[in-house]
Length: 284
Image (cartoon, rainbow, N blue to C red):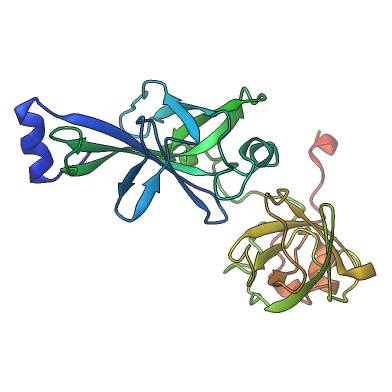
């Protein structure tokens, strides 16, 4: 159910009003972008919703009841000659996963007439980007689904399997998340060089969050780590590269095997897998 202020309800009853649609895109790394399908930029609640950089259009919204999934398709194209938004080349960023898992909120801002102050805002839809389609030279499409889609999970949750079922550093795992601080010493393409000195693969599958610099707060998954030059490769690719001297917090990852639990973390008592269970192919 959508909520509206008394002032907005009164305006709707008058049947004479204007609407501007506002889009807030928030990435998993807490970067927010503000857009509008209106023909002019809009300033509201301290944020600038840009119309001058991108063209944005949407399909009709498919609304569901109960646990049914609501859906929305948003088409975005780059305006000719537009400056990069927040210093980011959007098409390159989207190709590298900038909007993967991004949440989108669609709001409607109501006016009694254009040129007057807005009467109020109503949140019309909120969901997350499920797929990126039609990525071309000038634009792309986003398929957005409501949070009800997250209920589409397998049941029962815990099953017999060889690998550990616990989330690393979660309640079942029992380990406390370590705080390991590193410093960027160089950037070589998609690889970050650091002052860390650990065994090869120690941080594979772990996470990295920048603690300073222009990329502060951005979080990534560690794809691979090598002791040589403290080389770290992260996913997704970074739309903006960090600078030498930037610091970060990094935690080691786990491949959920018995040997890793025992030798790397010394946490065998909490191992949540069944490594000796027969594989399905051996069942009679």
